[in-house]
Amino acid sequence: MQLSRSGNFTYKNNLHLTLEFIGNCSLEDIKSLISIIETIQIPPFSLTFTHVGKFSRNNSDIWWVGIEQSKNLKILYRSLHEQLLENNFHVDNRTYAPHITLGRNIKIDKTKEYNKLTTLKHPWSTTVEAIHLMESTHVGGKLTYLSIHEHPLLCTRYRKMRILREKPRS
Image (cartoon, rainbow, N blue to C red):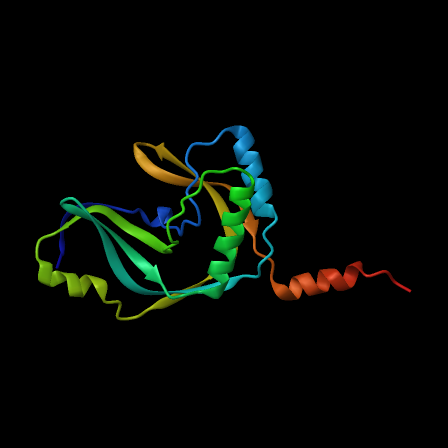
């Protein structure tokens, strides 16, 4: 059964978790953003998707999937946010509400269907292994997010091995 009457649903390849929205950037800004991202030192971590919700706007809604509280995501967000402020980037000062947008301008025919849509029968988890600097563009008339830089998160074991290797030998 189709529960929505209309909407602009996010393409599978465009699903992502936004840490900060920067907006239009110059080439110099992009270089600075890459430098900032490269300073982040955090091991990979798990995120669990637990619920679905919506932001209401006029006669339509933005539907999203929400994430269980994550200490590591908070650390990552705060680190990035503070560095962006220190480097004079305009950042949002609202409380960070991590989510993945499922669709915009979604119109539901029946309000009783809301409970069916907001209940996740099976929460799922994924491992965050990298941070991507994304560009929002149109390709073939479709909104597309392109990764213009990837910064892999370092696994703790690898960092320890690297530190051990760098110690002077006697």
